[in-house]
Image 1 (tube, rainbow, N blue to C red):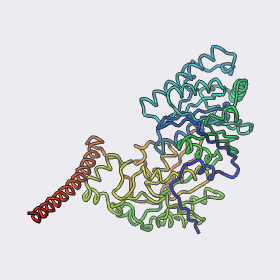
Image 2: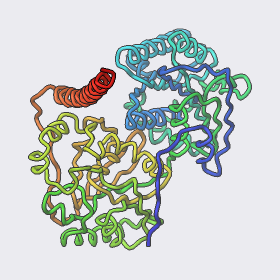
Image 3: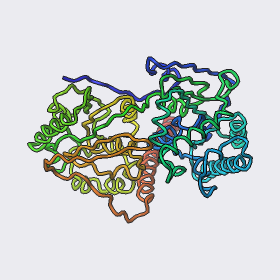
Image 4: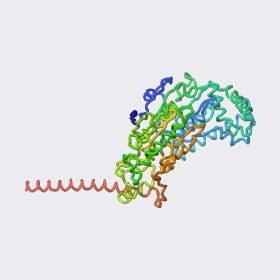
Length: 500
């Protein structure tokens, strides 16, 4: 049995965010014409909150997502600037608000990070900078707002608040004890010192205020997502950030990614198509069923594409599955069901263009990897919302999903190895994802094509194709002009003949 799930391209308006919220989320979204309207301005994401509230976790995860969808983003962690500026961490006393010498160092580190934000936006073409620090005082936030205003940047605050002792204790245990600050410390001593550090910040902490800070753009996250408050979302980037943050969670889980079993078209080296499984592909489907049973997962979700080979693979697992059209393999357009040798022979220019820039190359009447990432964004959102999921998909699709979880660049993405008959088990950890590769001992053909050594300049063939297309358009225009001119001359000749 299965359920059909049809996806459409998301429309990131504020009303959409309201419509998609979990039932338990409490939202207050305010709009006003007084919010400054910038055009193509970079955005500073400013974290706010006491230590051990998940700010760095959110910063890294959000940065990974934005880079994956094609928005150049970078984290500026002020704690790292502080570690670079001081020889070694001694104790919580460094963070006391009355420690003037330390306060100067911390202020200088924040200013150094802000200068680097300028460099990132002005020289490295960045679009979003995540300023990862506590920023717990109104004075510090005013400095950041003034800096942003002077440079023409938008500012969006993300405040993480948590009063659940268990969540805080777990965060300290999972993340803070492995911090360079506590290298060589006894675990108990490290926890004691860190709790005193939090107390130092509490002395001056002023949370964002619903009345006094109504002019600011921000989201407040309470107790790791039990409640949210959103204020003055300015643009589509901020809307996407809000929607993303409302879907992530920290519940322990695993995501299993695998390709379908070997297909009949795989055997003959043809791409795309909608063929069924080969005999070895059917054996893999049975082996996959046994492996998933060995994992003893309650309430396992299984997702497939709409293509036969993924459906046949999932049916062997023996649990209900959902079909996602968004999980269909990349559309190879006119090259569907061709071998690479046939493509090279019939479309040599297209074949060479794809080798020049595989991520952005779009098959004639088909898709590019860049298109595929956009198509898969709703899938990523739903994966973030779910717990244990098995995704039975295709090579290009699996590469895109894997690039998101492993923080791979657009250049790396099209060449990630995703062999047949292998399960990748992804387990989210503090600041990343642990990957286990499980080969199920069923042989299959190798469909991976290594990155070729390209001799021409990366832009040469793209320019040739652009010039060729421009020339064709110009020629068509000239032909129309010549035809029209000829018709006019004939008409004038006929008129002259009649009047003569």
